[in-house]
Length: 639
Image 1 (tube, rainbow, N blue to C red):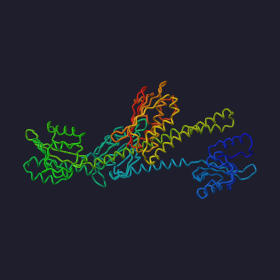
Image 2 (image 1 turned 180 degrees about the vertical axis):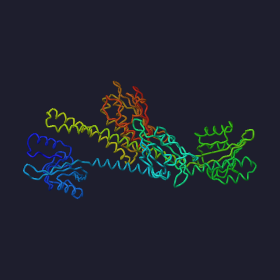
Image 3 (image 1 turned 30 degrees about the vertical axis):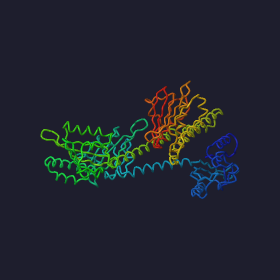
Image 4 (image 1 turned 180 degrees about the horizontal axis):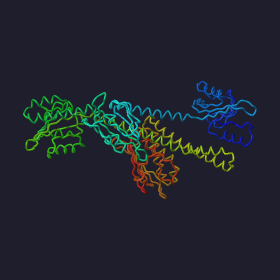
């Protein structure tokens, strides 16, 4: 809080005047009734009024007196002589904004009661806090509204996230454990239920030690629901240096599916017994076929004819005379990408005769042209000489399960991405803001020394200004990054790519001319339905980088190729510049504040923005580069 010296003269007076004139905070000297006697330049900048206008308006013209906090603030100052709090300011344009205020009462040289008020505009801080709150609410909504159990721990084994679905699956509340003794706490058994899982075999413990686990099946003896079978996946969470800082665990309740598969196995075993002993009894076989909704099949391994159950038509839509088909007809309906693998696996069971069981998952074309995901399990029947006679089995449509798994993967990817964004935002706040703030505090402390020489004082003032500029740069970058998240709401439109390129080339005209460079373009497609500002930013950053990082003495040559491939818009940017050592620096290429050439001025923000914008548009970006041989960026965007 600034209080002018009582005599208004001398060294102290100059000191207070310097602070008053150069402070970034709005400073007012006033009468307690609200009459403003003086205001500094920062007050004019923040409120938009001249000093004389501020004096005429007084407190009532620039502070919202209807805000209950204002009365509390003034009452506290009247009682205690000093106060700190938050008020609502009113700018000249009518905008209301949050400000942090402190005030003190004092008497001037004439014994008159006066007050000093310091105000700091914290509207951007409040906006950032609201954005962070919204992001956290979105993250919570994703976690709390998924059917999957989701848990996140720190590296000490303390749960940071433990959603309701996880609590319902386990039947107990989360239990932190420094010894990782969760098997007993959560009743985690092997799938047979014979013994608790050893601590070092638990997925969450293995993840904390760096292992990735996918879809392992465990039995939970849930105190409320009884036996619950879970498919558990887990992976470590790492910091930017690769160190493990926690674990992510995702549980899926597969009780119905697991018991179905077990019952199916039993049914298949029983069916095998029936078929082995009653091969001539087609009547009994038909009863078995009608007892299930799956596509039951019986293949003669001599003729390769297949007798289908009624479920085949119900599931896949094919009408067969007397439900009879053959191996070739079944094979022709396999998805081309799966056919070789599936045929090879079934032939191995028949020819090697090492196993009676065959099972595969594959894609299968229905009669309407759609594709079903299928789980198929068969049992080979041999005679006493191990000669294969027939194979019986059942095809099960698992398309819905596969879709659920894909949705789960998407939710996990979103969760990891949100977590990464939050980590990166925290890193910027803690690391990039700390240095200039520390310098500002240090310079401010040194400037309190009244014995400083003019040269020393000027040096500290220069240092203070440099630190303030650096702090402003970081805040500007943060605003740019946060604005990127808001821009996704910008309406998509038909964007002329050649027009975007022309605008960027005009913007970079002087720089391109000074470099002696040239840009070659090949637009096989000229329009795309997308966010115009994002595409402009992508062109601007990649072209300007190619110019910046040209080889010494070699004019830059930039080739831009745009085409449509497999329903995607492909953008290719290639240059003959310095290139990048991807083996050493590839992991940091798109990182925030990552730079690889110190001889050129830059922040390390451009490629981070490019990648963020492309991913926001549901696109992909790849890079090829070698030192001294230039760089090529390949971008894929939805049409």
